[in-house]
Image (cartoon, rainbow, N blue to C red; front, side, top):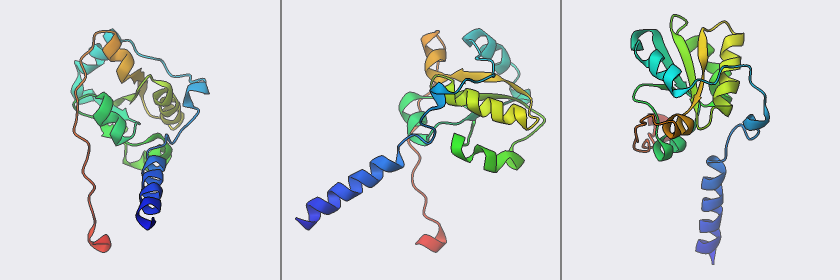
Length: 146
């Protein structure tokens, strides 16, 4: 019986950890430009001047796919990492359908970053764009937690 209860608690904990951080991003009206596939592909032609910030969870990126080179900062953590984001690049924010990406783009633009717009990976793929699948990241244990 104890094993069943423990298994139920562990599965509930695992599910809770994967719950979306921003639950109502789709209901927030973003001012950010939603990029089309053609607009995004044009920006990708100049990778030295571009920074892609994917605001999705790692499990979403591995399950749905994404783009080859990106910085992953989840939307809830973005404001805490502004000092780590280069200011000399044009930024495109990424989520599944551009809702969270739009919120992230607004936040970045409000802090003086050069934001070209937001794009949804699934929208890009539906418009004929190719995305890449990535393996789920492995959990890394630091020395203090070993």
